[in-house]
Image (cartoon, rainbow, N blue to C red; front, side, top):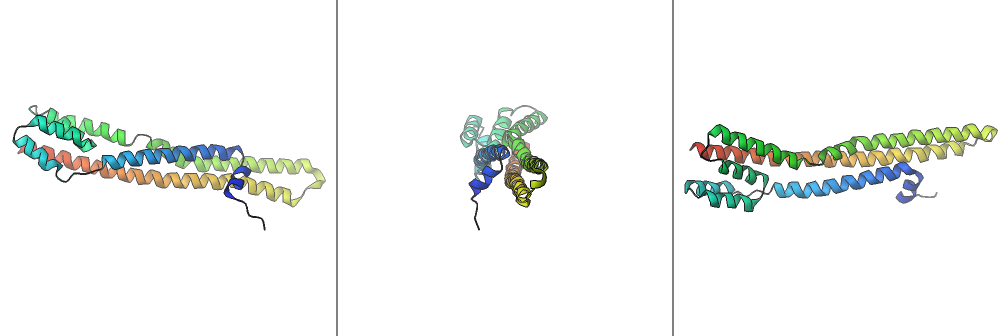
Length: 205
C-alpha cells in the first residue's frame, strides 16, 4: 500500500492548504514573539519592592525611578508612575497607577486576538475546502454519465477531507497556544496588582 507524505497530502488539498499554511506561520510568529515578550515581562525580582521601600524611606526618589527604569518590567513601570506622582493626593496616585496598568495589560495582549481568530477560523476554512472539494467531486461524477467509477468519488472525498484535517491541526494548535499565553498574561497581571498594592501600602505608612 502506497503511503503519502505530509507534503503530498498538503498538495492534494489545493489552494485552501496554502491559506492554512500562511495562517499557521502567522500563529507561530505571534506565539513566539508574545512568549518572549510575556516571559521577559514576568521576570520577578523578589527584592524589588524592598529596594523601592528603602529608596522612598530615604527620600531618594531619583534612585527609585532609575531603579524602576533599569528593571524595565510592567510592574516596575507602574511603580515608576506612582513614584512620579508622589506628593499628590492618594486618589490621583491610584488613578495614575491604574491607567498605567491598563496600558501595560493592553501591550501584553497585543496580537492575541489574531491568534484567537486563527484558532476559530482555521477549522472553518478547512471545512470550506472540504465542501468545495465535495462539490467538485459530485460535479465530476455528474459529467461522467454512465462511466461513473467508485474510485472517482472516493478519491474526491479523501482529497476534500485533507483540508478539514489541516484546518483542525492549525486551529487546535492555535487554541492551545492562545490559552497558554492568556494564562501567562494573567500571571503577569497578578504580579502587577500585587506590587501596586504593596506600593500603596508603603505610601500609607
